[in-house]
Structures are given as structure tokens and as C-alpha cells.
Amino acid sequence: QFTLKESGLTLVNPTQTLTLTCTFSGFSLSIAGVGVGWIRQPQGKAPEWLALIYWDDDKRYSPSLRSRLTIIKDTSKNEVVLTMTNMDPVDTATYYCARLNYGDAFDIWGQGTMVTVSS
Amino acid sequence: QSVLTQPPSVSGAPGQRVIISCTGSSSNVGAGYEVHWYQQLPGTAPKLLIYGNNNRPSGVPDRFSGSKSGTSASLAITGLQAEDESDYYCQSYDSSLSAWVFGGGTKLAVL
Image 1 (cartoon, each protein chain N blue to C red):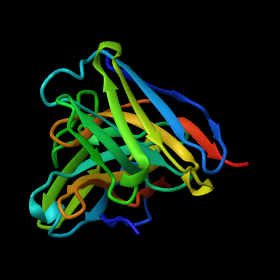
Image 2: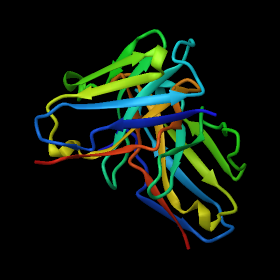
Image 3: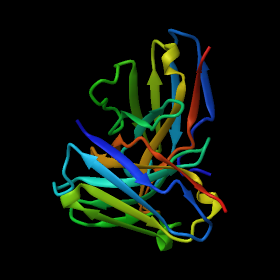
């Protein structure tokens, strides 16, 4: 059974850095072709892809958020960590991690973690 | 404004067939990148419904089917059921943006 779960602070002050951890099981990020990505979704809006890391440590970022994002993996712990700097209230959303499979589809998603940016 | 365009809403009566469209451009769907569809029930994470334009993951009923032509793709749902009432999103890859992109979403109402 494949699972992913997001964890991290759910309330962040403006200008602070958000750190989210995706802990997964049932698959390995050391297997060729596997990737884990982060997607966020503001309430009532469409999902927005943020970042993705492949098994070979290739990293991809949303062009509009590239300067604020960092994604890393710890294969031994089955974890992927996303950091987003200079948080703003417009970054308030549910943040999901998901496995990339079938080419470029996200086939398994975590339950999501709601992040609120407010002072 | 989303890179992939979907109608905001569609509706149908139980047992009917509905189609949800997803229109892209020459840098994503038209460039040959595959289209994937997700179903999102209220308060839950998106669930992969169709991958690679027209393939169903294990466990997805064959009432759901996908197709792609040119710069557009479609999700068809036959034999509508009350449980199909949900939000649906298409997703692809855009080579100009070098990004995975989603449609704006379509809310399906089962009348």
C-alpha cells in the first residue's frame, strides 16, 4: 500500500519560512522514474504545482515561485522536504505531496495539510 | 487564469452521460503531453481518475473514460450516479513553462 503524509506548522507569520515534510511508504525514491511533488490548493480554487524531486535528485520548480522554494529528499528516511520563504497571506492553502507516476501524473496523494499565513 | 481551460460547471440527471472538456495549447496538450484527470470530493485530496489520456487506474469504474484530440481532451462519465457529484480537474505538462499544470476545475452536479 502506497501512502504519503504531510507534516509541518499549520500557522505561519507573514515573512516567515514554511517547512513541510512529506513522509511516504510503500515505494522508494531511489527507484528510477519515481518522483515526489508538492502541490497546493487555496480553498475553492484549482491545484497549483509547486516543486518536484526525482529519484536521481533532479529538482524542478514552479517558475513563478522558484526563488522562494527549495525541495530536498532523504531517501533513507523516505522523506521529501519543501521550504518556502517569505510567506504571505496569499500563500494560505492546503499543501499536498504526491507521487509522480505514469509519466507525469500524480497517482498517489497525501491527505494534505492546511497552512494559514496570518499575524 | 489556468493554462488548461475547463467549464466551471456541468450537470446531468442520474443515468445520463456528461462530458467535461479541457482545452490547452501547442505547448502542453497540443505538444503531445498526456492529459490526466482527477476527482476531488469535498474535503479530500484529488484522486487520479484517468492517466495517459485514456487509462483508468485499478479500481476506477469503466463509466469514466478519457480522450484527447489536438489541443483538447475530454472526460466522459456515463450512467451518472449521485456519488459522482464532485470537482474534476485535468492536468498536463507545459513545455514553455517547464511546469506541471492543472485546469481550473469543473463542478459536476447530479440533478
